Length: 516
Image (cartoon, rainbow, N blue to C red; front, top):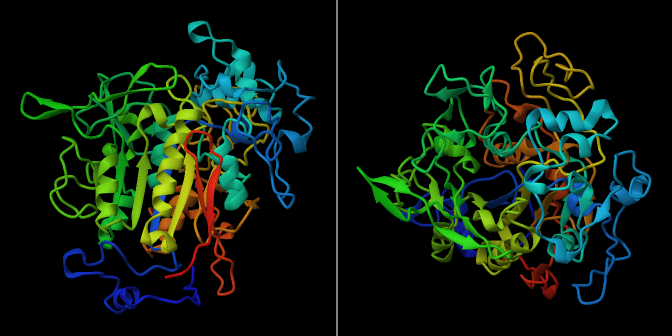
């Protein structure tokens, strides 16, 4: 990607930063600003849990708007979108049950089956008509027809409003089929191969043929809870950022220990109540991808000793509170991954769209209030679909023919045929997921139809900070670009700031964004 010059009024501080190679002051040289190929100097990736595209946007931009619920009204200029309304599958569906609307009062639902094999079987060779049978959950008395449910703009109101004012994709996918850990690892490396179960020689279907297909806990994490754990060999985006001395961090709710035992082993036991008044542990180890790699792990959950974003004993792995501690002191890292506490991450079964909305809106409202906003992009993305119904067959860009674990094309052992030397058990792309870009540079009320996946975020980071590629069959090489969701031209219209109510998702204020 070539450098694009933007005609802006540039502050003296920014001029000084550019003149010194991106250093804003001597104590944080190249930590808070660095040379980039776009005007984006700060990228914040909010990585949420377990939502298919149709589960949140099946009828966008048309909401039912019943009395007593947040009312959503769309712009007449809203572009066309590939969803259940446009496809005709809202009322004429070939699955065992028809899609149906979850009311806002039904925000708490069961968790669906989102295993690597189950999801492939639901797609039934491209017919997409077996979701009830294979990903619909029957655990704990759940009704499997729930898998066909979707929310509209009266419940996921904030996300619909963000889509109206910024940019959203309707053609973005998980990099492979399967649950949270493959999605998280694909985000940071595009490579779920190279995994080893510890202790070795233990039968564990979390890792097959050296590839992670399920949710093992990370080896390098005191707060892992399973008797076996996984480590991943190879590089991740943190390694590439470290090589260029660029400030970055993964910030996760509940990462800060509540206590320590024995020789300092961390205990992560903080909890919050969700809207169902159920206590949920904040931290989930298998949602933290950098803890699988020895090079980027903070095994003991140690606090930072230096500027957040530098390499010290925390090794770029932090509590969510550390992000705000850094940001309010003017040290927002160049690249930040934010992971909500479990009760706010959107994962069905223990979280919900109402608690998730509170987290998203509070986070984005605060970011828009920062002086760094004019050089910031926020990406809202998801780790997997949870098995929720989506009507679009993903393109097969990574073939696999594991006789035990693949069945995408309707017969056992078949997701195409992996070429000689290609790693198995990376059948992908997987289900279609929401992807939104919120930034002064985001195209306004725009739907991107180009094919992208989770590693498109990885590639954006690599390209924007000139990091190179992961290598070793990482999907970053083939990832579609996110740049179509931005407007970096000199005559662009800066997207307005959009402040929302965290409870309702409705507009509080729209203010004009100006360059500084």
